[in-house]
Length: 281
Length: 167
Image 1 (cartoon, one colour):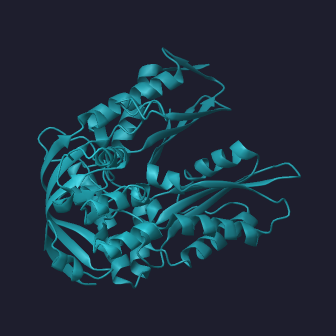
Image 2 (cartoon, rainbow over the protein chains, first blue to last red; image 1 turned 120 degrees about the vertical axis):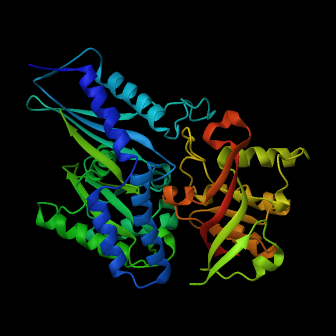
Image 3 (spheres, each protein chain N blue to C red; image 1 turned 180 degrees about the horizontal axis):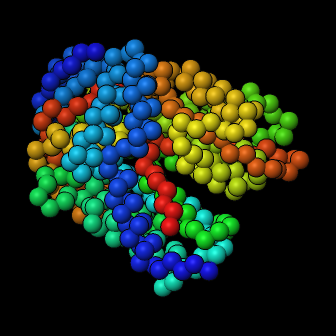
């Protein structure tokens, strides 16, 4: 067994959150630059230029990229030869979230009771943490700060098992069209196809961690991703819903085996404030 | 794309001179109000109680800012989704509100109220909070501190960039 002390995880998560709240993922910057070069509408160009400038100012002046500093979402891959000493992993992560929020003056956006809407937890805890056991002696933590606007526009539907790929594309396009400017386009789409009700949604979220420029290793799914991207960008919704060619920057699909009666399709929308990273300890 | 500099509060003549798609640079005072604060404003109107500011001269900014770090004027500021405010907007417009800033589309009902009352809805760029913060010259908690980021903040801005979405 390899022992990882709680303090090491705490420090790494606190620093990671402090880093991703500001500035921009280099792959996202490149995607926005390509979108800017492709747009002809003055408004779309103005919006994309502002987003690039925002990223630069955010990093330089240490002002959060977006005022909605999000829910902390963590996918933890825990090696079967890892022993975390000192505290439970969820306790360590939540303690790190609390510290990162205070040190960086991030916005506390979590209410403890969804019905009374009070009290605000004050430090953005709890994080949403998903665990899986992996082979080996490493701890992988994929961390995202997920804003509420795009999350609200996400959707899941149980399609007929005989639905065509065109129907899947039609459903995704319908959801992105309904989201319009509300999801802060240009968006990134994480799509879970197959599995059951909850695995489709989990896979949709997990797909948002796929590097922006990567292509699915399965050709059929890679082609589907490409067709969805083209269909979504043909809607003309554009940056911030103000018209243009760039409604989505990337589409990533994760599939899973499913029941003969089912074809769940879950779509998780990610705004352009795509703040995420991976830590390997 | 026309770029127009405007001083708040907007006059009826200012609003009638605007066209959808114009870029506006706003200078003056904004009051933040998002879900919880909007609900409270409407509850006060229902009771004929006094509001914490005059709706007729206010510009409402659908925004929950991030905390202000020491030595800074403000934290990150930016618009939240306006459609969540659609259920409160007709009542606020009927009681004098004419200018609001958020992101995303409005309901057909709100669009009709905007037309009927010669009010305007502007969109600021969602997630461009570092840039928008550059236009802030003063930032103060105005009321309802217990709502945290959903409290009402009074923000003085100079050349705050946004776009005419609907009027």
